[in-house]
Every structure is written in C-alpha cells, then in structure tokens.
Length: 187
Length: 187
Image (cartoon, rainbow over all chains, first blue to last red; front, side, top):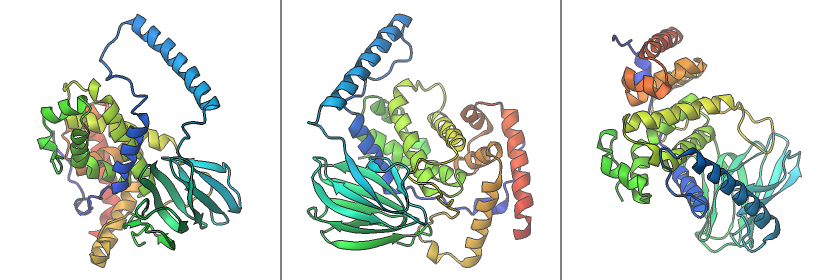
C-alpha cells in the first residue's frame, strides 16, 4: 500500500517531554487504590461469578458509604479552598488529581494540610491561574502550577512541599514566596 | 530499576512482570512510552499541557490495571495505542476539563524544553504546523499523530483505531493533503 508523503514541516516537530509529575500522580493513584484493588482480572468468568461479583460490589459500596459517612479515623487527603474574590462554582475542597482554576476576576486561598489534616500553610491563587493537587502523603505534598501565579506561605518542615511548573520543580524549604508559570515554559 | 527501553526492547518478561504487579517493570514501560504518549496527547489537545498530562496519566493507569487482560495476540504497542486512541476520543467528547470556575482561556502553545535556544524560523514553522494539526478534524488528526510519532504500520493503526486499513489509508491521505494545503505557504 502506497504511503502518502508526510509534509516536510511535520518531520520537524519535536517530541515533547512528559512532565515528571505524571508518574508522581500515577504512583499516588496506585497508592490510593492499593488497598481496594481486586485480584488481577481474568479474561473470562462464568455468568454466576459476575452475579456474585455484582452483589459483592454493591455490598462494598454500601459498606464504603457507611464507613466514609461515620468514620473520622482515616481522613481523605484534601486541601480546603475558600473564595477571596470573584466566584467559585464548587468551593470547598480540592483532592488528589483535581484541578482548581481561577478566571480573570477570581482569587482563591488553599489551606494546605498534611495527611493527618494538620495545617501546614496557605497558598493564594491569583486570577487566571490553574493548579492541581498532585500528591498528599507522608513526606510529600505536591502541587502543579500549570499557569498563572501563586503566593505560598508554608510552615511545613523543609522538603515536604513541592510545586511543579512546566519548567521546573520548586522545593519548599520553609518560607513565603511567589511563583509564576507561563505556558511558554518560563516560571 | 530498568529505564530507557525502546519500543522494540519491551520484552515478554517485562510484560509478565507487570502482570505480577512489579512496580519497576511498570516504570520501565512508562519510561519507554511516556514521551510518545504525552506528545500525541499534547498535539491532539491543541497544546493543552494539563489535558495532555491527564490523558497520559489515564492511559498508563488503564494499562497498569488492564495488563492482566493483555494476552499478546496483538503487539503491545498496538494495544497501548488503542488505549491512547480511546482516551483521545473520550477527551474530545468531554469538551471542557473539570474545573472549579468557568471561563478559562484555551492554551494555544506547547512547552518545549530548551525552546529559547531554538532559532526563530524553526519555532515559527513548528507553531504553524501545530496550528494546522489542531485545525484538522479528529478522525484525520489521530492517524497522522500515530503515523508521525509512532511510525505505526497501516495494520497497527487499523488495529489501534478499530477500523480497516483502507480507512486508515484514506484518512491519512486526506489528512496529509489538508495539512500540506495549510502549510503550503511555508515551503
């Protein structure tokens, strides 16, 4: 079969480098699901097995709901989000893997907390900014600044809080600072 | 840890290790394919780094969770790029990313490590190609990305896109012509 000529310019496009934060997010997701992950799936199961599995899933769902509704011993990793200016359509919390995005007229404040819900600082999110909670676990609190500006004031021990930008990763040593990230890799 | 493997070096042993839940084997697979998967996503989603990161993470999580179902009937790369194609199509259907506020401007540039050192003319050409690629309809954009970044055969592309080789050839042909037309002024 005859191949068509690829336009010359297409050959000059660079292969983009995947940010390191992707693997961090994958590891965080795997860690989070490790306890609830089922045994390796098999290619085929008889119909009755699916019935039992469905009942088990429903039972697990009900159990999980009851557990999360009444148990306070294992807090879910999340940072509090409050509005400063403008409006947030879903204020409250940002969890691992979720994005927080401000428009031109909005600002928000994120209260950082560790895995045991102890406050370790605040981050003020400027207008037109997009951030993501990448990881929250013992020894690592990680935020991704995709674009815009944040002002952080962190009281956590050094090397606990990290900010990934398109250009680099900032390691917090316990201070207050402002970071900007542009889509052209400058940060 | 095994890193830096090329596509051709992904062995049955590594895939079997992944089936057994070996985290280092997963990391090796990730390192071998991350930049290609991320690049496809980046160009597919018009240079939106956030969407590309999300899609790359999603693809590798699906790979990790589903590798027990991979039985080697198709090539590993074909199976992986089927996940990529499905994720791209899902992403295209979800018009907007989940965000706490509305009104985000689309990101229209790509991050290129070291782009400051590139000469102006090459950068201008790359921008034009990105814009032309982004302007292609999804069904023409995907095969071109698979062909250019992965150098997949028509058969592999047909398997990844779940269509016939004739359809692949037709879409590539039309896609190349549309691209060439848009880029003619640069030649």
